[in-house]
Image (cartoon, rainbow, N blue to C red; front, side, top):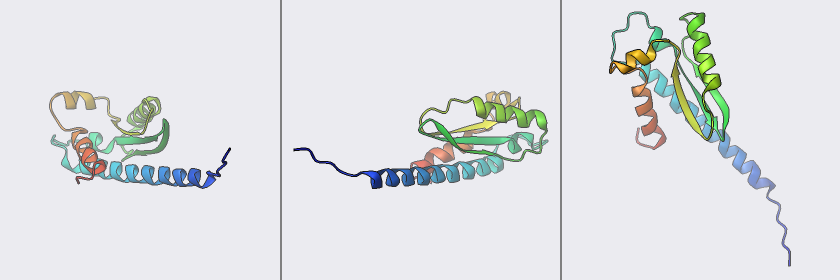
Length: 130
């Protein structure tokens, strides 16, 4: 005996969940960026490092959301962060942070908090431990 079942409603349900997941991830990532801008532990001479933060939200290997803060730090940094976010590995479901200033990794290598607070906050937020 062959039983057929219409599962079109299941597809709609799954698509709805995807939207909710992406919205939640985007909300928490944006909160993380805002917190990072306030909590960074380095002397802030120009605000360039703090205002050039961004991220992408991926779902099932596709970019769903992109956010870049500030954008008041010049075309070079703006293009750098856009290019990096364009080229970053977007496989799976994830949030990837970036800083558009060319010296961000140098500052981070000296032990300063360039993206650490954002990352830590996000891990807690996504695991329900805010």
